[in-house]
Each structure stands twice: as structure tokens, then as C-alpha cells.
Image (cartoon, rainbow, N blue to C red):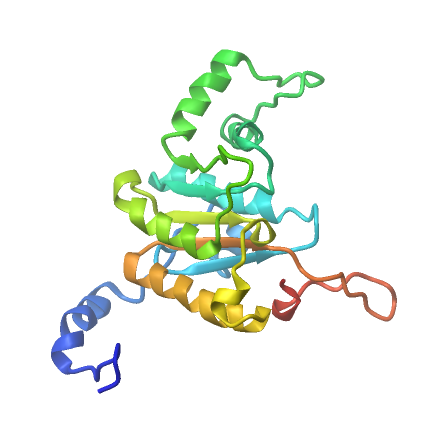
Length: 227
């Protein structure tokens, strides 16, 4: 027998197969957008990679989807999102989504401090934001995913988000030395943790240098453009 593997027997799958048949193939959660419900939904034991050129709205859409799962279903989320900004900037974005109000005094929908505090109270029950307390501290993706699994039950989270991949510490030497070897090692770790612990991992990844077609128009980034 190969270490870490076994040949499945009927008793290994009978209960889960019966449940799968009874419930049907598990669908993800509706995220509030009719235009994409037939193409994307969110379920706990899976992963999503988000990519797009800077300022294209990938983080805004991701946070909107996370907020809707909290609003609709009570889901909770762990966030490691230094690319958005510091903790207060992250809170300001979430409060805007929660209230439709802004911290920009130029606009009529400038939020009152009471409204901001009330909103923050609800949001901090659903969004757990990791904030760096030491300037030299660093976190690898694997460390983050393992931490998410560790606190899953205590916090009651369904998802954990990295935004973005470039802001993490990447231990290439520990996983073969090259970027390709690194990815082929750490992504299966992520996928396995997601499936075994029933948690959804989101990762925001910037694409390589934008590609253009013969007319000079930007080409939407593809899977092999992610870095």
C-alpha cells in the first residue's frame, strides 16, 4: 500500500453517496447578482482565484459577494487583505457596503459616527480582519490557510481571503526553489485543507503585464496570466 493512500471500498462511500443522492449535487450560495448566478456561486469546501488588472474591481466584487453571504446567510469571514489598506480602510469599505454611506465629507450621504459605530459592530461579528502589529511580521499563504482552519470553529467562519497573493511571504526554497514547483506544492495544500475542513479560500492574484490584441485593446487576463 502507498503511504497516505488507500483503495476505496463500498463502506467508505455508502453513507456519503446516499446523502449526495438524497440532497442532489450541492449548489453554492446565491450571491445577490442575477447576472452571474448561472456562472458562479460560493460553497464552503472549494476555492476561488480572483484576477483582473489594477482598478478593475476584483476586490470590490469579492467583498460585495462576501458581504451578501453575511447579510443573506449569516456567513463569517477571515480577511488578510493588506492590498486594500490598513484595518480602518478595510472597515470603511465594508461600512460603505453595509450602509450605502461614505466617509467622504464632500457628499450628502456622509455617515454619522453613530451610524459608523453601529455598522462596525455588526461587521466585526462577521468579518475578522487580520492586522499586522509588528512591521517585520510576515505570513505565508500556507500559514494563513492553516490558521484559518485552526480558528474555524472558534470564529465560526465559512471563508478566508488573501488580498493579494503578492503581499504574502512565499517560501520558494522550502517548496522546490522555483515558482512553478512552489505553486505545484502549496496549491494542493490549500485545496486539501478546503475540502477536509469545509472552508472556502479566496485568493486575489494580479495578472502579468497586460496583453493587447492587434488593435491595441486590452485582452482579458487568462489563467496562465496569473502571477
